[in-house]
Image (cartoon, helix red, strand yellow):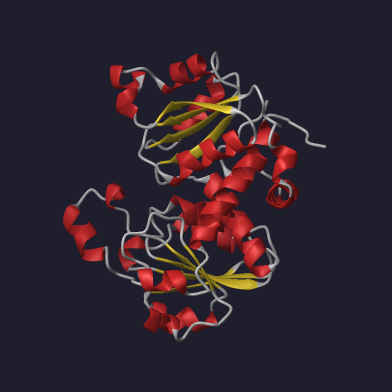
Amino acid sequence: MRSLIDILELTTKELDELIAVAEDIIENPSKYSESCKGKKLATLFFEPSTRTRLSFEAAMYELGGNVLGFSEANSSSAAKGESVADTAKTISCYADIIAMRHPKEGAPLVASMNASIPVINAGDGGHNHPTQTLADLLTIKREKGSLSNYTIGFCGDLKFGRTVHSLIAALSRYENIKVVLISPEELKLPDYIKKDILVKNGIEFVETTDLDKVIGELDILYMTRVQRERFFNEADYIRLKDSYILTPKKMENAKPTLSVMHPLPRVNEISVAIDNDPRAAYFKQVLNGKYMRMALILKLLEVEVK
């Protein structure tokens, strides 16, 4: 039995295999429509979510399985003080696989150590979000044709953005990737990620506070929101929340082949006027997330589809 807590638990070969399965699901959905018949996914969401939870649920339904679970901590026994370990042991009696989101970093790891079924980390604090990274990788592959040889800019909250941290870790294993880090000084990428991933893997990177200055060199622009829920100080959030807003005017300096990505939800960091720009890839990214979660569920449940 295997869980997925951190994207680095998957080898490059496994990532490529998951992408291949996801692309086959896109081309041949009926082939997979009964593959998880009789299986149950438990969605344990101790933190609010729209896309991730519904994406997991849609993924399981489209594989022919069923879903049970809760969408906030107050509607679970956590409100009575039950530990994550006990919750995991209990849910193992009811379901075949768990998708868990939790505000505390490390909670899904604790769950995986106590569950007798696979656990998928659906986001833990500011730490990890491996299935969003799977969605991102499939989007890059389908937009660019490859996971190598491009310049990607990460813009906004790079300090608390778990999607950014996970994607940088995953991309570190592909060839000829250049990273541009665009953020206010207060929200820079943590030093340990720069040192342990970028420097260690010899990935070229630059840091800047100026999006306009670098947008023209990017093949991919990965926007993120400044996350109110990660701030202890409301004044800091208000001061930084509008640091970067992508507008049609800013896009005038970008390559015609640029792909704009965003893990969503957005607040106002991408103007709705960009939605009709052919370079906007963020809603494709949402759909790709469902297909990659389908592929991951099949892998962890060890379901083979002929």
